[in-house]
Image (cartoon, rainbow, N blue to C red; front, side, top):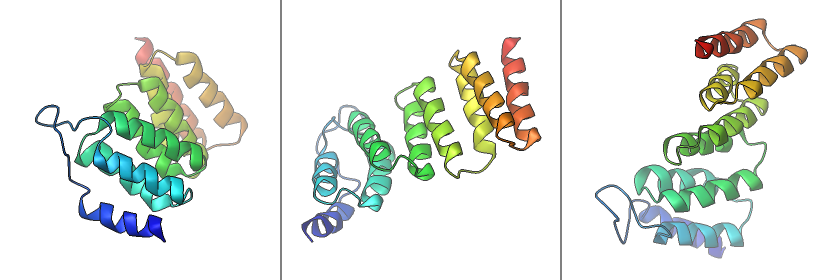
Length: 164
């Protein structure tokens, strides 16, 4: 019950940043990050708090460090939730600038129900991150699992493009 009340309260201030670092970014450990931590400690399986809260941290108030910690917590709590993994991948790629972590998260999303094209995205990210072997392994694993040959070939085409 307390987690629900805090959630409703947090929704009213999803865009509140008590201390800007610059014109765009909120200081790490923002009020929103702290209240989301409390909410999910009180109600560990409150999926909406993880899903919407992490996006508010990264996109709305730009508490990048808080969002990173909260996404890690969300992925650990919901390891087979492709939408959370996909959102965490966005954050890893664009805010943390960590292509390899983003590729791993995109691959997790692809393995857990994301649209088929997400497999291709994982292969491209691995290749861009300098992890060509991981991209090739992904293609081999998908082929062995009987995945659509078009998806496998698209991954291999991305690998070839990046070899040039």
